[in-house]
Length: 274
Image 1 (tube, rainbow, N blue to C red):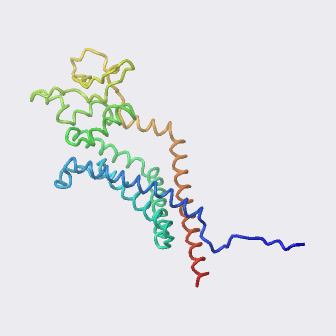
Image 2: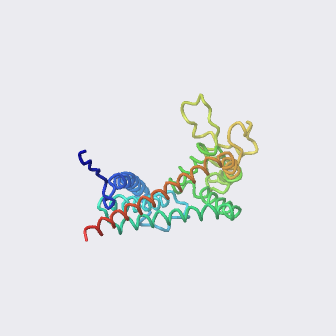
Image 3: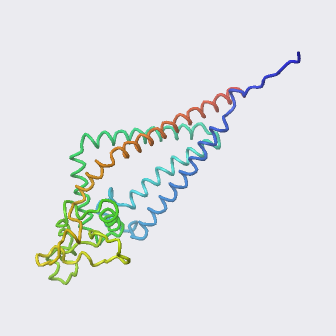
């Protein structure tokens, strides 16, 4: 019988499949991080924040700052992952695995702290949103964020209700003395939308908090505060949030394992050469 030779893959070879999976996924994250970072920097440039940092009233809740931080983290992780895999650089792959592990640890810690210090977090969120209301007309990013929360996401008005808009100088009922047309009103994002509306009425919130207002306010604006609406949203979407968190954690653990396996292949190949 003729000899049949069996060929096997050398166990010291670097897995091309593993290498290019890590490379491809992280190239995507690299570009996403770069785009998010660029948007954050552009937003700060448009607001002239870099030349006047004193304008930042609450940097931790500033949307542009959050974009800059999130984009930087995503960019660094994507860079170390894709370059480390492409160049078979064990140092960059180790950094990639460490970054993912630290991010996973931070997310788990944040999740635990959220449930342990739920009341404290609620107080901080209330304080932050009230600060947003106070500076509503001063920061376009915060203004757009509040409008999106009130109109699109939670369909609410103010932190605990429409009266919270008395904290803003333009919507305060006493501002009518100085000629503010928005006095004793609320932003348009507090107004209930109607399916037949083709053009958004930006003046729908005028005068709605005046005692002399003749219409049923509950039919014009949302009377529920955003804090209560957020709690209801979280309760209704708890399963979705939990599933997303588990999937994200699983993907990060998978990334760490892939990086470590690729490093092991590279070390095995180098030891064979020597």
